[in-house]
Image (tube, rainbow, N blue to C red; front, side, top):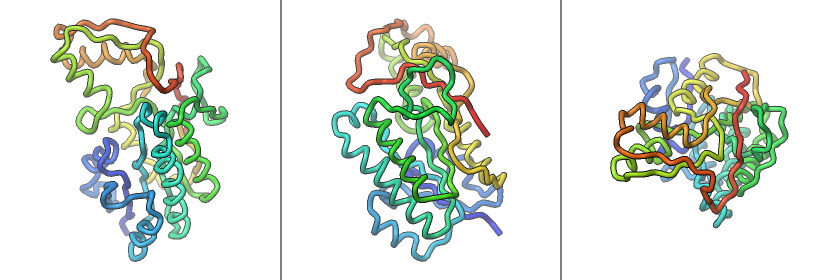
Length: 263
């Protein structure tokens, strides 16, 4: 019997990547992809109605509010989706015996370390986005026993969504010079690799529930990543990259968020 998998937040870059890679039922899995318009996790009543006559084995939650700057200015939106919405989803998964795979973030950490963060490290977010995501994690752990919380970092798709990778490519075509911060260190993570990891948890029927750390393997600054993007796309001649350590943002950003991967 095929496993039935619901993917929420399917309009985002990770949801679109999962659909692109796995919608053809390659691993005896049947997917249902829903965007925010089709299923708003902040509406508890709609969630209950949606699940009433449907059966799923897994729910991959890609629904999230990820605008770090706006979350600092209007935190209510971030908490509504990343905390309250996740709580609603965890409750409906508990009621319907669905294993939840929730995507979280390296921003639950404060960045004060200088060696990779492990799942044993105590979270200490320094901005509202990170705080809202941590509260979502806490809600899941209170409600569910069968869950995976997958923390990842600097997520990007080369094809889908708005992200640093695509922004640098676009700006390189129009700007003579780009100033890129070298203050932060993390691991840029391709959505294709994260998608394969998440589906691997399902295909392998893992029962090693709990918090997971997954990212790509090369720590770098945003400046380093920009250099890589230009090189990969043969855009080195298009623009001049300037390294800066004075990149000012409204929200505080953790300086170091390399994650130590675990199984």
